[in-house]
Image (cartoon, rainbow over all chains, first blue to last red):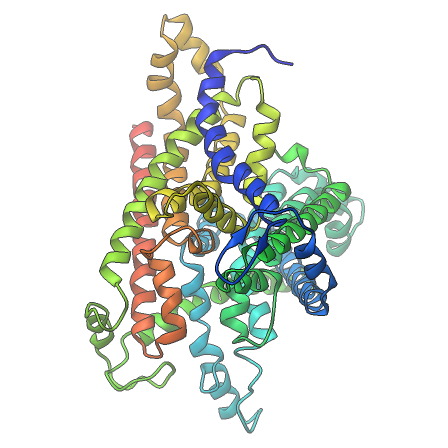
Length: 283
Length: 268
């Protein structure tokens, strides 16, 4: 154990205090309240397991979890392929350092704008009379507007990809930039084709970036409720949405029990990712 | 597949990705200038500033002015706190100190715990303590759990590449620790500090999930916009989207200009 040194200790204290008060204690409160009793107006301190048996015993909960997993797996698969490709192009196909940084910035900027606005902006594109339907109609490819584009699972996955692809691109790009270019040349010199170089050199060396991106995407999709609510038009469910509905009905202990289960599952998923890939060298 | 052809395909993928990122936003930017009789989709029914004007009439949107002021103030508070706290913690993590490991774990946990759980937890904590949740207290804290980890990770990236010889030189020349920080370390890392400020400001300004259950009775702008999505079916929604997006771009641009000016000054 390091000796108690006052200066770094004091420098780290504000961060520690904020995180303890606004993260650690709130998570503790969540766990405590998840054992409470409640009626239609208030929560009643108690120690009971009813909230958990309700959560785990209901078929609706299981279906909702399955649906959330389904979204997570699909979005993860799409963003990994897309993120890897985009990061690869940025890192290896763009030769000029300035162009590379400008394009990377261009890819990062949307992350700093409003998620809700970015979701809303799909409406004129995907809607019944939206750009895509009009274009397809004009081209004669369809004879009536496609209804599944907006307010559907398709729209939810599209919005997730739109919002979270950056979280995959950035860490993979960072890892790729650290790959020694001579390794690629060596692979080519030894007769490996382009595809083989990617699968045997670039991909294994980008694993930690992929893992970090996956952790981001998985946790954000697992915990999301806004995107499902806005983009599915109330036709799809997610765990986050279920929790937010319970909150609006003031069923706080039930929401907390759900939250604790969700947290446990998310932490297990992250544990599994970390089991497969060691990301410590990235930190 | 020849090399050149493949290169064009790959560059095409990047182009499409950028179009995918910006295309929808550009669509609502155009549609926000819809004529007074225009709807939520194309075609444009004339061109006007009608919907921007409507935005500033109180009945059109809940409380646009108030929520904008609150969001701006909150984002500034979060920005300043994020910069100061993550800078200090970043300095601390360069040395070993008691509790460094658990604090790092807690910071990473802060990044990966779903936002709605933080929102619910902080809301309940205030409730149990008998405090009223407010945008400047509970929402402020809840947002910091999202911005501080980013700030600290940026600091890690900076100090990983930092050459300690500069500090040693300052110390050899008789600088106190504060002088070496103020005149040596800070000027070198300033562009990254601006980056942290930018992250702190914009992430707070657009934050929704962590604010939802912690903002109390007064809405921030994202909460106001979310409320509008269910009730407003006119392009006034797009006008608001255009305004906040333009504002975000403005903030990003200002930060980039500051970084460029700093770089130019150092080069001179």
